Length: 296
Image 1: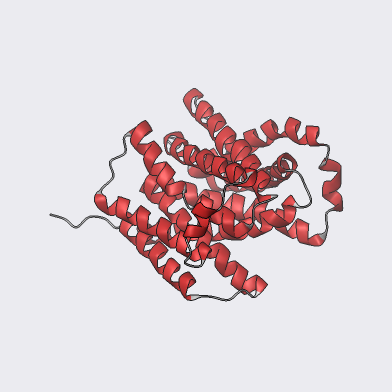
Image 2 (image 1 turned 90 degrees about the vertical axis):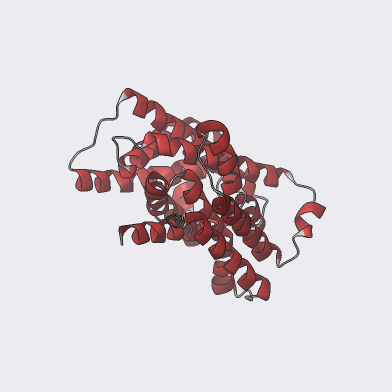
């Protein structure tokens, strides 16, 4: 039962992130990337602090090594990832960005092999491959050749940089959660990241525009802060702790499918046969990757 609940959370996190791509497109038209990231994690940190204190009864003090890990998480998952993501979303459509983000599990697997020598079976590799294929089929409407026929623009490269930042964030996160809970690690990394982002946000000179944002932008900003940062990050981190970085990262392939579904529900886009096929591949790949081997 606990394991089922864990995987439900792992599946819901990228669904929330799928909506974040749409919200990110909205807010990126109003604010520059560092300003957006600063406000996002300032609000998220303010949300997480009372939750941490209430759940654990205090603010646990990290050891020296844990502090170093938290700072690395702040750099990779808060500062770099969000700057790269919001920079890319200024010019890249949410659907195309989702295609690039779908490469994340493959990058995590590769870095796991190189950095932490994580043991991966054939079934996990097949699951990752099927999930990535499903994400590509979903977003490209079955015409995967479109990806290789179009030269990448700077926005594509920003999103690709975000992929590598998130992969590093995932791998570091596993090591950061020793004595500290996922909630504590996230809260501290959000706060540290907010402090790191402040001088960059000030240099953009756009913080004064935040109170003047239209309602649609504030809804997007609040969603990015509480939904896709606070809740989704926490669920993803709990998954990393129990399932390992490679299995947890496979669930990110649900993000492109979620982005397309949100488009259908919110923008009236049609649900095509390639969407159904891609979703089946994604879910099948996730199942293969997380399924425990049969006892021999």
